[in-house]
Image (cartoon, rainbow, N blue to C red; front, side, top):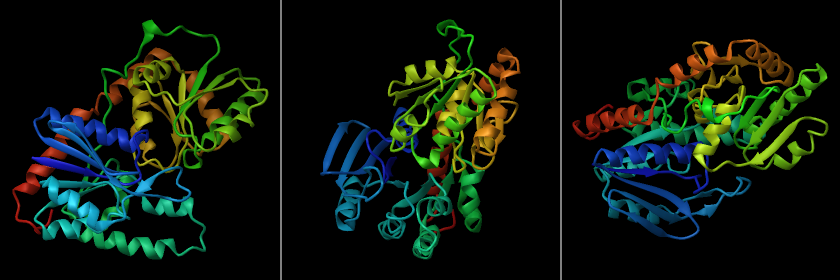
Length: 371
């Protein structure tokens, strides 16, 4: 089977979405399937060999997006897709690529929407209320829903915007590499001062400023804690200007996964305060390292920290500070066991197997039948 992963708004250094596509794609290949990732870039390019290949289609730079690009020339993309001759197109964009399922159906190709975000949240978060964005985007997405063969979401929170196509909907949690993300007790030096970690993009939707507010709140209460921010993004300089007098380090983006895992394992608590997470890969990675996570009380993070693996609170400095204090009172060894046990329920092997089961099921049906 040839699976084409098609995505806009990703770059070679993108975060969770790009990593998820890569991790799943590698598992497809390991099972003997051909997999091609198609993304936008400055120019057309093809690289890779064997079962895993990468195709870059010229795309325009999207204003105010932090450097992301989008493929907007339909004929150029159609030509690429016809040359690739996929059995299934896994579409990871339900706005600018919403036309693909109808075109693919006309060419006898299956399509599955892999939804990585809730559009209602994106519209609410990024656009002023007076702009008619919702009236433009939602009809486009509604039309796309009617033409895809299936919709895959990584969480119930993400799936909630697809209740009108429940017959096509499948929830497949993402995974974690347990050979990389695991408790590294022998490699980590214990410290007297608790370590609190924020690992993620320094952008407003991730709410890194909430972690800074929590650090200041703890300091005002006379509670010692060291905060480490691992990541980069448009808010970094502003955040650095906010931490005078606090025990806070900004170490930038940690590209090496083993280094990131060691950092997560060394932390006493991780913070993921974004209220709009549709899964939360860094949350799962932290749990796999045995570290509890404080998440927002909305979003998919709540679904991951079940079984005493963290706390879900309103994303404010005071509430996060309260949660940090509560988690530090618990037995570190007991919490580690809970977190690792929870993370063991999810892996990239299981995730990719469920995708492949879906694709095999679709291939056995008559094109156009209900998914």
